[in-house]
Amino acid sequence: QAQLAETGGGLVQAGDSLRLSCEDSEYPFSIFAMGWFRQPPGKGREFVAAISRSGAEIRYEDSVKVRLAISRVQAKNTVYLEMNNLNPEDTAVYYCAARRGVVPEIIPGAYEFWGQGARVTVSS
Image 1 (spheres, one colour):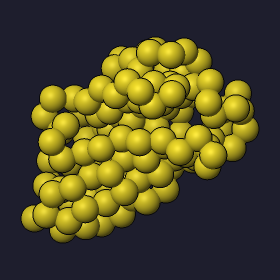
Image 2 (cartoon, rainbow, N blue to C red):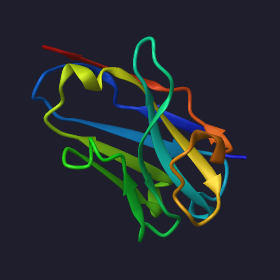
Image 3 (cartoon, rainbow, N blue to C red):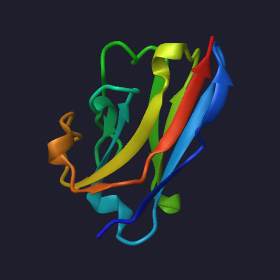
């Protein structure tokens, strides 16, 4: 099974940029479609972005697609989430997830493996 670990979270100011990383340390990374989800304080987990196994297909939640970019580097077993022009509404715990399949799904239930989460706090 995949062992996912997110890094790169922290406290930033509004307007700043941040890059989250998620490394898979246990299973062949190239077989997984990968997703990023977030859980704001007091709310449920919501879809942010997803990328197919090859990286050819990418999906974003509409409200963030202008400011965020998902990518993957197969040789590093890592998926990234680049976040620009952050605002306080981006404050959340960010989770990466993996699923054995081609399609980058947008629902949490489609993913089999999850990281422990990385907290991102954006101050105004």
